[in-house]
Image (cartoon, rainbow, N blue to C red; front, side, top):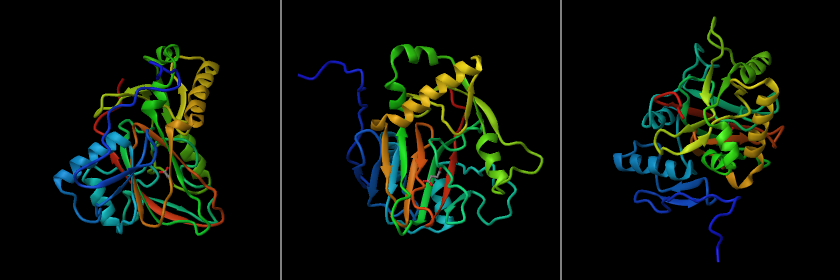
Length: 297
Ligand code: SIN
């Protein structure tokens, strides 16, 4: 006889396992699906577009293997879902595709982008709601996978007293931390005369499309919780970051073959690129899609 309620499990929302315009294979019961049956280099029909949005709401991370995309097709695909974001490190850069953030790592790289739990560029006032990473070359030794985590479930698994404590709190997300470290290595500069973005977001926000609550702090950008002492803020953020990193049922792991595109909802997920392939190379680029409004509780 199943228990009515188990403190380590949360009710699973209704999701679809079958769609009319493509086939899916789920990566875990809680997050991630591989999609086959669509050619992303050609424009999506209205029905395909609508179903893909639905699948993104259901599974949060969609993996499309065996896609042949050039830079324009990658950008066109992103634009089908909204305006494209230009990364703060590429604003003003004289490059052919400033909307595509290069994600290249090789034997000369001092770091790999995204090697730690984060959501992309949450230091922007209007954050990115989605990102599409296209990996063209994978390490010949294997590895270079990406972990993703479900932030609805991260919130739902918190106990009621901790949920109550987070209610009404907001936190500062600052680009200066991750980006100035990279700048010191000579990588990526902000627009001349401009600072890296920084802003405040609620610690718990509601997804504008699904209406569900999710945990919205991440270890790359969130520096402190407003109104708490430095020690309280550090303690509470560390508790939440540990919860996100160590609760494995929140996670799925995307294994990239060459020419795979992964599309994730950047509000309700976080991700972590695994750099286990040094000195081998991994090559790709990311297009990100702007949200419509500031995240709200
Ligand atoms: C990123 O943070 O967008 C990069 C993720 C990856 O390289 O897998």
